[in-house]
Amino acid sequence: MTLFDFIQRLLGRQKPSGTMAKERLQLVLAHDRSDLNPELLEQMRREILEVVQRYVEIDIEEGDVSLETEDRVTALVANLPIKRARPLPALVAAAAAVGMAQAPDPEAPQELAVPLASEPTEDPAPADPD
Amino acid sequence: MDAVTSAPARIILICSGKGGVGKTTLTANLGIALARLGERTVVLDADFGLRNLDLLLGLENRIVYTAQEVLAETCRLEQALVKHKQEPNLALLPAGNPRMLEWLTPEDMQRIVAMVAERADYVLIDCPAGIEDGFKNAAAAAREAIVITTPEVSAVRDADRVIGLLNTRGVAPVQLVLNRVRPKMMASQEMLGVEDVTDILALPLVGLVVEDEQVIVSTNRGEPLTLNGNGSPAAKAYQNIARRLRGEAIPLEDPSKARKGLRARLMNKIRKTTGLF
Ligand SMILES: Nc1ncnc2c1ncn2[C@@H]1O[C@H](COP(=O)(O)OP(=O)(O)OP(=O)(O)O)[C@@H](O)[C@H]1O
Ligand SMILES: [Mg+2]
Image (cartoon, helix red, strand yellow):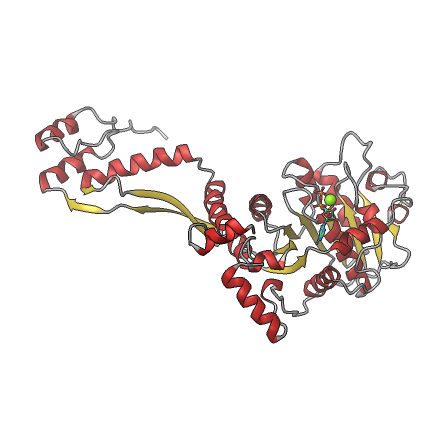
């Protein structure tokens, strides 16, 4: 450790490199083990937020979806602070919209959310012969 | 080595993912240590492309045949096994030679290991670096494994990949050796600690080997540290691994937390709180 590092540590400005190594490893191994690259994770995060937003108003800025790993078990951990639940009509619309690619715009008037639900959603799968 | 078989042989893969972390050194030292404890031991060099195990054991001039000739039935197994002069309980079997273009299949590996296992208590397989074909071949016949790593991010990450592969292959138990530990750096947290690595990899630790210049000296001589009761820290560590493998309960001491005299303890404390030296 150089004198500079030492002073930085005394001042609490820098973590010891061993600690940094552990933190960096935990992050990279969570991704290695799940075979999810940061891009896929980001896409999943966006989709999860969309779904959750149909039911509750959440703080998007504070929302966090990440991978954590312990004892070789990797978990998807979502921390989504809820501002408030949506009023009932919006909830009904949200329920109707399940399966839609797009979430109702939270800022839009609620009536607008309803027509979205009447847009053709995925066709019910035709009965499989076998 | 006679053909009296008792318990089935322990077939242990020594692997790491990352290269140069100490697989071959561990295989050589562990092989000698087990042999000295009376176990009939065969070390199999599966890293035939860049074989080194012969050199570390001082047997480089005595290799005539390899597993390939045994499988092709151009020689008998006894002819291919190179017995160690000072430690006749130990024999080396090179999987192949570097001029060989095509190696054996995983099935070949299983066949040769089965033959060797009939006349041994321990078969240690020195794995090549990487996780490709060389690894897959070496792992084909392994029942258990020792993953060796150093306390560095790249080595630990690669070890994690290998552990994942071993798990899917059903190799068990998989145990960990942490090599090239620098107690001072660990104490000042400028290196991943022992617990950091065992936490992350979630494997039981079977050995801790400190960074030791004697390892290099012994490699130069072609005489593993465990051969002549050398009292160096690494030699003791290798001996302890051998004994733990046989089921002896030998406590693992974290060298970065070693409690010595009052003065040493005090210095350790100062070091830990200040990271000064
Ligand atoms: N505990 C130790 N202290 C000091 N040097 C060590 C220690 N362990 C290994 N080394 C040195 O590290 C180098 C690599 O060791 P070794 O050849 O055993 O690694 P390896 O994992 O078999 O490498 P490869 O992946 O190339 O097969 C050697 O020079 C060896 O002397
Ligand atoms: Mg090697």
